[in-house]
Length: 129
Image (cartoon, rainbow, N blue to C red; front, side, top):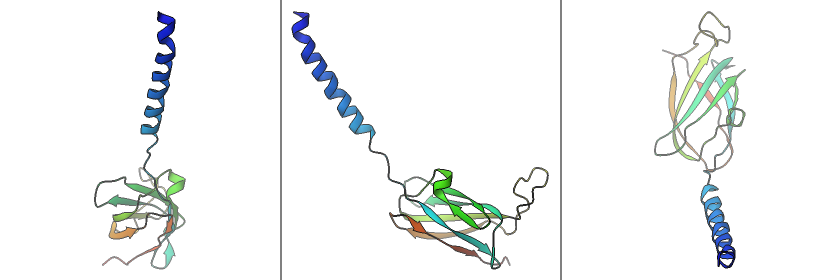
């Protein structure tokens, strides 16, 4: 009698595993953002750019090195939509507890609508007042 139920058990087990696998595979598609960050016409030596969604979603970020950034390098990305942008830039000369060096401008903030696709987004951080 037990051997008669085994094929049904294995079929049910396989079905449950397939349903579970399909449910887990719905990973949010994130898109790559690359670009150049400049200040006073020069590349920002070191820093970070943050992409904070205005609505629900995944925040993204990227390290800035010699003015260039790439969310893929930091295993990050955006899903597209309206984002608050925050940029912190440093002189790149480590001092004491400041591994990126001294800030070269106050945190820059702005907004940007990013497409649901890989994109290039360059920013010229304006001079501080």
